[in-house]
Amino acid sequence: MHRSHRLKKNEQFQAVFQRGSSAANKQFVLYSAKQEGQAAFRAGISVSKKIGNAVVRNRVKRLIREAVARMESDIPVGLDLVIIARPGVEAMTLEAIEQSLLHVMKRAKVIKQAPVHNGKRDGKRG
Image 1: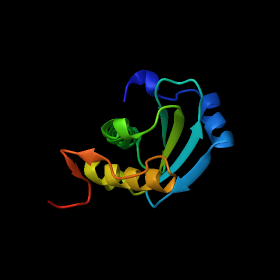
Image 2: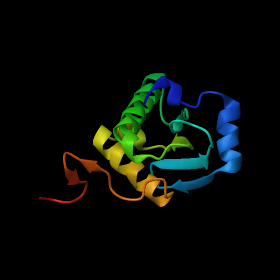
Image 3: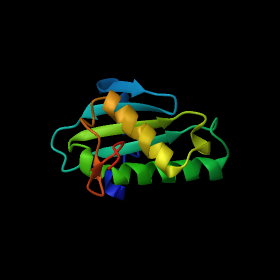
């Protein structure tokens, strides 16, 4: 996920909270709002102090950014996303975070189907 595709300012987060819709699972809350005239989607990540100290929070943010970057081609342009991590996410691996984010994005109807990686659909054997 490129730096220019990040939400950073409080006003940007507040706009998504006010205009957007939300979906959640045990690990994440996802807010999404359409933003016209954008060349790509933008994402903001929030990890509270309930998750852990600064080292742990920064690690969680890095893992979430990497998981979003892996799904980048499946997320439609013109969306602003805010991802809020819930307690318990600090113990998860990158793959588990990616699966959980995929689940919550499907619930929010941000992603329509399982993304294709290595020529195979996730969750299918073969």
